[in-house]
Amino acid sequence: MSIFHEQVAEFKPKLRVVLESKLEEFKMLGYDTVSGEELWQCLEKTLWRKNEEEPKLFQLVEDILSLTVNDYMNFIRIESFKSPIWQFGESI
Image (spheres, helix red, strand yellow):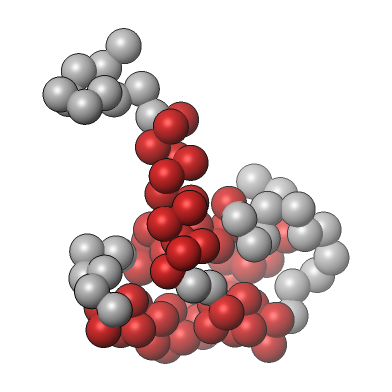
């Protein structure tokens, strides 16, 4: 884990309200199975993957609020391609 991700993890308790707000938005749009941890992983692996500067709380809030359902679905699609589990639950 990079230093940036460690610093972001320290902000996670403060960002809980913003994450819950984004989850409520997703639920209103019909995506009610998304968890807070899945949303957090999406942010870490997409928006925050290449950052090397010190994270600022307002930037993290902006990133969370700007995440769209389309961004999340693209993340899920890419992660599913990386997974060794096939359609019938068999693993390689």
